Image (cartoon, rainbow, N blue to C red; front, side):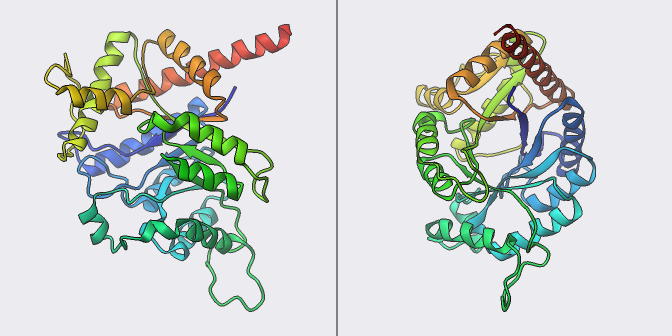
Length: 339
């Protein structure tokens, strides 16, 4: 059975604060480690009142320091916001502190709006050099050459896996050309998933990092005892998505009944399209949904995300998802044995 991992934004809920959100992220990671999740990634976003993962490298250190075996990483660092050398130093430091447990996913989006991008001192054309920046970043992790003036210390000679993240065809093509693992953001940008998978799989060139392609897909999974309860939990995420598109981002709101009754038709369509890959329901509904998604996409790994207002309900959702994975693995084993 393919690995399941977790993508976390350290959501700040209404009535809470960033300190609570960051502690909840660590608590979730500790549970995820026990439940058998492979990775726990956090994402770089800026100037969003409901997201506490802006200082991504710092949060990774917090989570890795409070866990023992689960891989911890960035999903991702928005590389054009930073110097490749600085990111190499940061992740070299993390890899030195937590050997064999750190992942570095990089993307080219700003992770913010344009005013915030300017406040980050991000150049308007920063994304244009993303391929060169990725190559420079990777070079800093190679052993230092004689006479090399600029070095990442720590960083040089350390094995820090670099992933390409993307929500478009550009990332798929770049990951394929560089022979890197690719994570596609199908959890919020699903329209190009088929084309992205095809481009990545067929265009992949074996490299020093991978001999065959490795595809991770993002997926929203909201699990609860019943379909109705799961659908209600999902409304917090739906509210956040609509508010963001309206230009009014805020803290994660509590779930509501009959969400969507007051949405404009265009908003409803946007929501349905953007969150098309969301599995919401009871354990059996989730089992069927996961089995279908895996079979249709051929993913090598799933990156599960769920922005749930109540922390206990969020833990329960990820626990149910982990149990469903074990059921699917058992069914897969029985099928293999019968064959």
